[in-house]
Length: 178
Image (tube, rainbow, N blue to C red; front, top):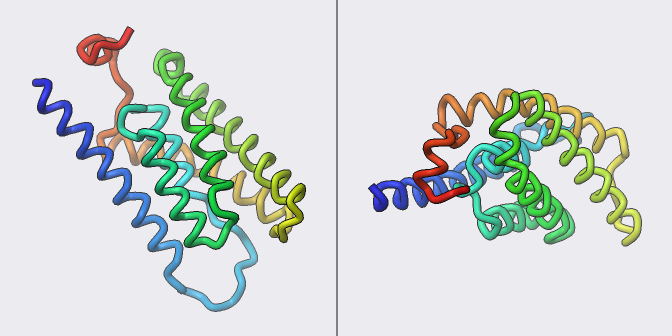
């Protein structure tokens, strides 16, 4: 039984990296050559947060950091800045995951919304302090609002289609958790 859970955990870790690279690939496909007027939701952050709140053992900090560093490089953002904030947000949500498991989805959504808001504000502040050109504030706020709005759909998709469910108390005991 232990080897099955170990292989399942590693399969889900690989599945997260494949999912993240797929999101980046579809984000980079040039479907339109005109500059966009709106910012789409950040599905990479939404999936990272959904997996971190539901199964923290599936997304170690190193894989999140590596995937988001690659995203920073591909999306031409300051290297490591968004990766740092998302890793810190994921670790915060992982620490709260045990408390979120006993509450409703609304509490989870509120916690994720709070982390997305803080990440957006810190990212804008960091860009302003380092005098890096940044997109209009309305674009960042729209992306933040859309990411928060799409989170329930991402959480439902991760639970139903991908099988990333919260640990039940019996599962946590079997894995050696407190």
